[in-house]
Amino acid sequence: MLLGKFFYGWRVVCVCFVAATFTWGLGVFGSSVYLGELTTARAWPVSTVSIAVTVFFLTAAVVLPLVGRAIDRLGPGPVISAGVLLLAFGVIAIGQLNSIWQVFGAFVCMGLGYATMSVTGLSATIVPWFERHQGRSIALAMIGASVGAMSIVPLLVTAIVIWGFATATGVAGVAMIIVLVPLILTVLRFRSPEEVGLSRDGDPELVFSKTSVGDSAASISATQENGRLWSVVVAFSFGLIVQIGFLAHQYALALPSVGSAGAGWVVGGTGAAGLLGRLLLARVVDRVDPRHYSAGIFGVQVFALGAIAMFPVVPVLITGSLVYGFCLGQITTLPPIVVRREFGADAFGATFGTAGAVIQFCSAFGPALYGVLVSHFGSYGSVLMIAAGFELVAAVIILAVPAPKSLSATPGDNEDH
Image (cartoon, rainbow, N blue to C red; front, side):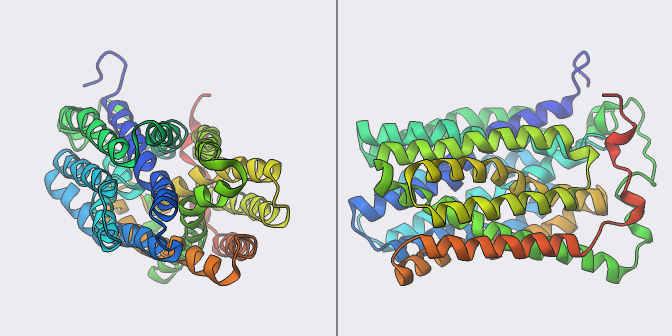
C-alpha cells in the first residue's frame, strides 16, 4: 500500500507527529505551566507540586513495559487511543482541583496516558515500518514534541489569561480527544508493512538481510551487549533527570523575571528551538555515530545551564533557554535511535522497553529533585550548576562504551542524497 509513491509508514509517522504535539504540549511542557499556576494561584508549596509532577513521570515509567507488550498484542490503535483519553481526562481534572491531594490523582491519570504516547510508545509504533530510515522516521515524528511546546503552551497560557485555568484546561483536553482519536483509529490500524504486503521502507519484496545494521549485534557477547545497553540507560537517565526537571520548573524559573505571559513565551521559544534541533537530527542521524553526537549535545547543555546559573539576567535566560531547547528534543529522541542502531529492529521492543522504562523511572525524579534543591538553596542558580554537572557525567558515560565496529557504517551511508 504505497498510495502512489507515498509509503504508508510515513502516514504512521505523521500521526505519531500529531500525537507527540499534544503529548508534549499538554503533558511534558504543560506540566511546567500547571506547576506555575498551582503554586502561584493556589499558594501550594513548590516542593509538593513538584513531587506530584514527578509522580506523573514515575507512573509512566512503571507502565511503560506493559505499553510495549500491549502494542505488540493489540496493535498501536487501541492502546494509544486509550492513552489519549487518560491524558485528556488528567488535563481536564488538573484545572478543577480543590485540595492538594487531588493534584496527585490528576498527574497519575496523565502519566498513564503519557506512557502510551511517550518516546517508547511512539517509537515502538514506528520501528516496524523502517530500516534505512530508522533514525530519520523517529526523529521526524518527535518534531511534534517541539511543535507542541512552541504552539500549544503559549495557546494554553493565553487561554488561562482569558478564560481562567479551569476552562482553559477543559477546552485543551476536549480538543485533544477530538483531533487525535479519529486519526489514530484510522491510520494506526496496521501494525507493520507486512500487513499491507510491503517490506520496511516500502520495498516491494518481504526480504531483509539479517546482516543489516543492528542485527550484527547478535555476534557480540552478552556481557558487551549489557555494557552497551546500560551505558545508554545510565547516560540518558542523568541527562533526562536534568532535562525533565528543567522543563517542569522553567515556567517558575522565568516567572519572576518576565511575568506569566513572558514565561509562557520562554517555554514556547524553548520548544521552537527544539524544533530546529530535531530537524537537524532528522537530517544527520542516519549518517553519524549517535553516541558521539549525544555526547556533543550533552556538552552544549552544560554550557547553557551554567550560563543561566552564573548570569541571572533576562537576555542570558532567554538565550540559554533557546540553546538548551535546541538540544532537549534531540536528547529525548536519541535513546531509541542508539538502541535501534546497535540492537536491531527485532530486538527493539523488548530491549528498549526495559531501557526506556528505567530511563523514564530515573528521569521522573527530576522535578522533585529541582523542587527540593530550590527549597534548600532558595534560588535556581545553585540547582542549575548541579544540573550542569549531571549533564557532564552523561557525556562521559555515553562515550565510555563505543558502538561495535561493525556498526560504524550507518544505514544512510549507501543512500543517494
